[in-house]
Length: 250
Image 1 (tube, rainbow, N blue to C red):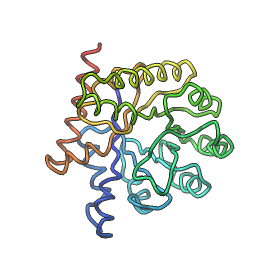
Image 2 (tube, rainbow, N blue to C red):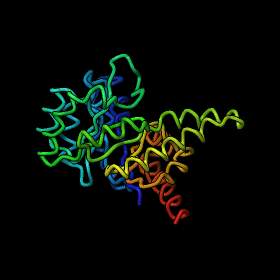
Image 3 (cartoon, helix red, strand yellow):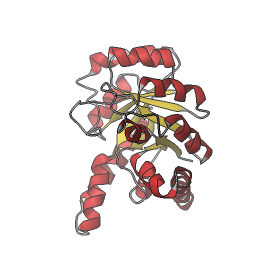
């Protein structure tokens, strides 16, 4: 079984558009869990553009599955994680000017700042690194003592979109192969393999066939579909899609 973690950041994005109190992220987390989610993912960004500190505390108290806290590798964020103690911390790159995370963490260049992750592991928190499927970054992640990696699927998702408009485009196959090889290498390095970013109800099917895949983190497409069909239905549809692909492969 591939675990499905629902990223509910964009429920908070909608709330912050009016700086109001609705929609409530805690309710979204509860609905996602009751509809088949195996975990809840939230990204507490340094600029607090969507998820707020209050959200992190409340969601951590009510989540019955697992809470995956995405964050930058900064002293402030490490302090919050050690206080909250989520089940998983995923360290991600972060730029103030970006709309969403644009690429994977450069583990090699940021090795010094990642040393503080040992404090998280000592506190019983799983540590995952959000990286591109680059062999050197995967090996560096293992050297840093990470428990998991989350393969950045954004390039694959973009290539899938291009292929939809231009069937002769071969980018999607090469991007998928990079992810496939990355998953194999990560497994040999002793890392748990997760994936996410830009995944939707079309391009996720192929991703489900990556070797050794344990978890998928999907947010924007599910929240978007939930606007029209309801969050409960949107989560259930993605859960059923993933399960059907796993069953077909066995």
